[in-house]
Amino acid sequence: MQAALAALADPTRRSVFDALRGPPRSVADLASEQPVSRPAVSQHLKVLEQAGLVGVQTAGNRRLYSIRREGLAELKDYLESFWSDIMSAYAREVERQTGDDND
Image (cartoon, rainbow, N blue to C red):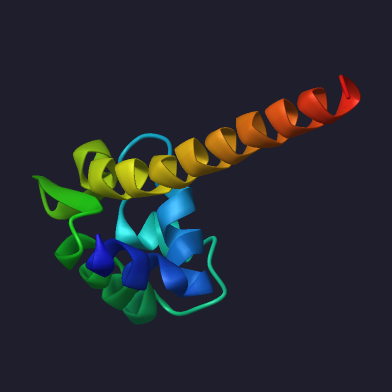
């Protein structure tokens, strides 16, 4: 999870990652939409791949990148734990306010 958080902390890397929400894409395709060079996009993809967030497959002479949904599972669980905390705090506050109204 630490690697995923670190990888997504960079705004350009997050933009590259967001661009992969659809079908698999090549570096050239991704670079055409980014404010950085093609080699820079390749480096960002390498970091995302090492963090387990992106997978790559070969199609002829092209490498196609896509999001690895399973790579997001641990990060999703971590973030959902905060949601549980928030909902518990909300329930306690409702109970407190409801109790105060009955006095």
